[in-house]
Amino acid sequence: MLAVTEAAAEAISALTAQGGIQQEGGLRFAMQTEPDSQPALALTVAPAPADGDEVVTANEGAHVFLEPRAADYLSDKVLDVQPDGEGQLSFAVLEK
Image 1 (cartoon, rainbow, N blue to C red):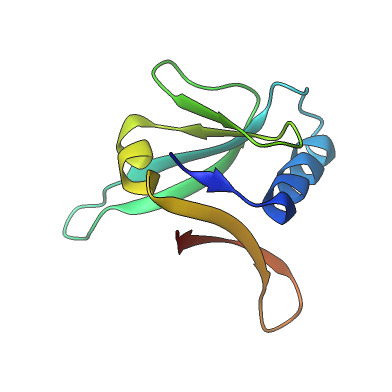
Image 2 (spheres, rainbow, N blue to C red):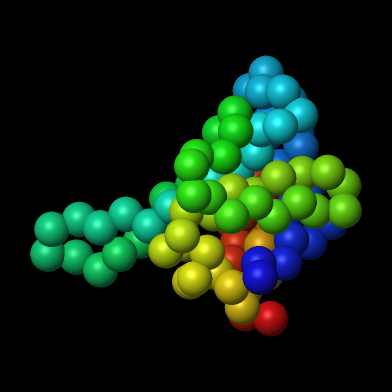
C-alpha cells in the first residue's frame, strides 16, 4: 500500500483547505493513457473518492484516493514532497 510521509500529508491538508474542500477531500491519483504513449499518473484534488478508489489515510488525516490501476502501480511506493529548483514544493513518488 502507498505510504505517505508527514510532509506530504501536511501538503495534502494545505491543498484541500486552500481549495475549500471538506475534510473528506484529498489527492486523487489515476492512470492516464494517451494514444501512442506510455501510461502516466494524473494527480488532482478531489472532494471525495470515486467509486472503486482505494483510500489511504495518513496519520495527519490527509486522504489519498487511488484509482485501481494507480493503486497497483503505487502499492510499493512512498508519496513525499520535495522542493524543485525554484524552491516550490512538488509531490514525488519514491521507492520504499
